[in-house]
Picture (tube, rainbow, N blue to C red):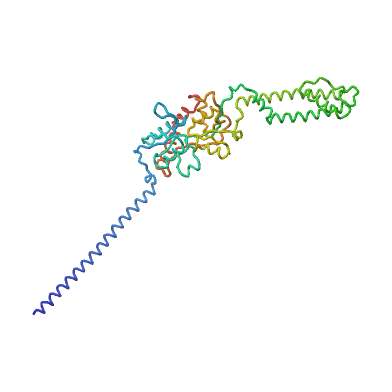
Amino acid sequence: MINAIATRFRQLMAGRKSSIGYFDRYDRKNKSRRSLALYTCIGLVGGILALLLIASPGLAQKPQLQQPLLVATRVIPPFVLPNKGELSGFSIDLWRSIANQIGVESKFIEYSTVPELLSAIKDGKANLGISAISITAEREQNFDFSLPIFAGGLQIMVRNLEKNNSALPNILQLFFSASLLQVIGIALVLIVVAAHIIWLSERHHKDGMISQSYFPGIFKACWWAAATLATQADEMPKGVLGRLVAIVWMFIGVLFVAYFTASATTSLTVQQLQGDIRSIDDLPGKVVATTAGSTAATYLREHNISVLKVTKIEQAYNALQTKKADAVVFDAPVLLFYAAHEGKGKVQIVGSILREESYGIILPNNSPYRKPINQALLSLKEDGTYQSLYDKWFDAKES
């Protein structure tokens, strides 16, 4: 009896374990199916989002336009200049028009030098920079640039020499100039040729002014040719051929004196107005001032020209006026603005543009603001706003 009950109990427990194992296996299978379905849904949603981002890359890079932008700049008239505690200038007005076009608020942060400005953008202390920043291949390795906002270049500025009352240095320089040495060389050749013709025609004339022997006859003939060329002859040949030569030679002398006078006058006038610096070829051996880290400093260094590096362009102007520098090389529009205002009558621009450059708005690499800024620039050029700002700051009729 007891054995029968125990056997029955064992059968019931075995059946229960079998049922529990069945449901446990069913539950595991169900969980696996639910997990697979969940992962499948997540993968589909992720794939759809990825396709949307690829189809519309602007969505992935759309900037938070409602955030105030930190704009790095530096004072460099007429692009940026202080005005009663605020900033004004071509670059400032242009950026305000761009910011209004794309609907953002901004705050200007001033820096003293270009390297400081570039460092601020690279370190994330500013969202972008605008001033008179040249677009170069070297800078494009570390930064992005907008479309060009201004086309300029490098030029030379020197002291105005009109107040120099000492003519002696200019005259000495004229006598040792290449043009005068060339004229003197031509004159010597003509004198020798004319002297030999006179000596050949006069040596057999009984009353001739030149002896038959070559020496010293040729020396007197050369003296006569030189004196006649300077329209100071005191004796004339006696023979017919000699007199014909003398007439022709006197006309040549008149033309020579006129040519020499005109050349000397032109050379002295150019020296008085421009000094001895007229182009990049005159800068070797001179001290040229410009700002450190600028494209002008790089350009001068590439041409082996001695550079006086300063922090601000105003210090370069002062070095030129105090004769610590012989010239200033910098951005042409900046020098032209100074020469027309603060430096009027003190300095002058010489030579042509040394190297053409374009200025742009500088941004960090892969900046989301580059595209809206470029679109705003194109709109401002199309609707005439850009031209109005250009005329305001650079058109002589407007100043």
